[in-house]
Amino acid sequence: MNPATPRTPETPGAPDAPDVTITVIVYNDAERLPRAVASLLRQTHPNIEIVISDDHSTDETPRVARELAARDDRVIYLRLPENSGGCSVPRNRAVDIARAPFLMFLDSDDELPELLLAAHAEREVDFVMGAVERVRVDTGRTSTWMPHLVAERRTVAGIEAEPGLFFEHLSTSKMYRKAFLDRNALRFPEGIHYEDQLFSAQAYCLAKAFTVIPEPVYRWYIEPYGAAEAASISNQRHKLSNVRDRVYVQGLIDAFLVESGHAGLREAKDYKFLKHDFRMYAGDLPFRDEEWVRGFADIVNPYLAGLAQGAYERLPRAERVVLQLVRDGRLAEARVAARGLGHGVAPREVCPDGEGRLYWGGLVPSGPSARRELDLTELGLDSRPFPGAQFRHEITRVERGAVGAALALTVRTYDPGLRLPVGPQVASLVVAPGRRRMTTRFRLDPVRPGVFEGRVTLDLTLAPVPPDGFEGVRHPLIQLTEPTGRGGHLRNSGLLLAPLSFPRLRARVPYRSGTAPHVVTAEPEGRGAGRLQLRWVPVGVTAHVVRPLTRRVAGPRGSRVRRAARLAASVFH
Image 1: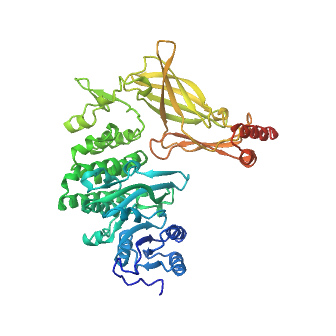
Image 2: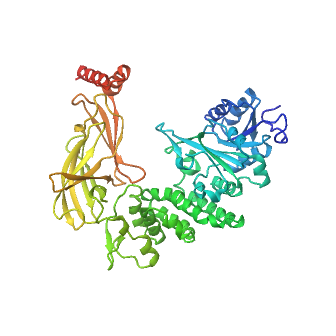
Image 3: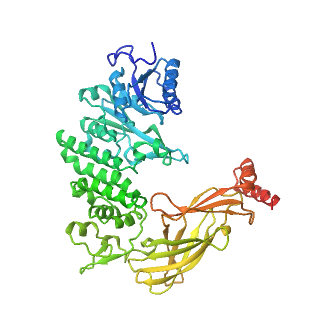
């Protein structure tokens, strides 16, 4: 049979039919497609069918796919006559020709380490879902997607029993019974992005029962800093069209919930949207320009207005603040508030009303909704224990110091809870490129009630880099102290936020005290809160002699590494 010609569909479950069909969708990904298919051919269960569904690639993908099909008769190559621009069409065309009673989906840049047949054999369910292992391409670090949802093995009698599973909206982490999909005419919506979210919501609602297992069944490779033109849909949040697509799909899900008799799940689904979908965009707000933020608000605000109030009330206060500021059109303030998400960073200022309640910003909100959402009283800014007190530390000016690897920083500290006593404060700038910390003390002088400012010089040549060097990133902290009255003190550590616009400053740290040379880069963190970020890269002797030598002689005892590093350093001193 010509591998470029799709097979004629046979009755699922026929004697010569495979047990599982896995659809591998691909578009211009000739390099990674073999890895994806290889992960399937390694399966211990051999009776499988692999359908490579090509969305009309224009690179070497057709040749690579045909070669894969020619090597193994379990592999079928299906090429679409024209590019569809999304994932839905290639998946649907593959489902239409699938011969097996069970189906799974795989993207060409990922891997499928485990099939889910055993769980299907244990109990009659409509689909089985497992854990998704996320692998950062840039760092190699692994994590589990939504680990709390798949931590326990169980069979769920309908989504009403666990509506929190709406958060796990990936279609690729599940093995579906084909009869279930066909009986409900369940296919991926074509012509839109975020098709997984609608497809998964429909599958959850239509399934009478499904099984959850904690074992990893899908390996998802994340490339957060890949080329913008090659980025996945979920990594294209910088496009307003991406926001529009995501909101549009939410409307389709809402309509389906009503039509299918699941309107009672709306609050759970709204909470998922606020906590997951909106939250991702909120974290990006500080890094977007004013025009983008205005466009974002114009898209999301009509949809936000119709969400269940109970969904808002389940969110952390910091997220509710950002949402309300966006809804109120206070967009510059929303960008400021968004830098504290997930980090316990205080606002720059708060405003009390006549009843002693504190609100975000410089004015008491006028409407009842804004007062409810911007009320910070529960945070205890003026009363929580000092180690957990919330401050805000921002760099307002960055200059090169008098020496090549020094930074002269002007730091402004906001204390909206008025926790610090009137007068100058002793603060410390702390950074640890290794196990030892470097602490630089400086003075914060009062500017006005609740605001302090000071200057500090961070000399990176003094940083206690390990003898064998250091390669990595560190984010300096600001520490404040409060006397306990017994000769001791309490310590508070907080993030140091960088100006998002300051240019990278790079310096070479020469040989010093047996630890170097390195190139150190100071820059604003490009995501999240936008902390001051310091990056060390070993160069010269450190990179080519000291570190390789310590790796060769490294044993179970760290002292051997340290002795080797000191020996190498002394040779080149």
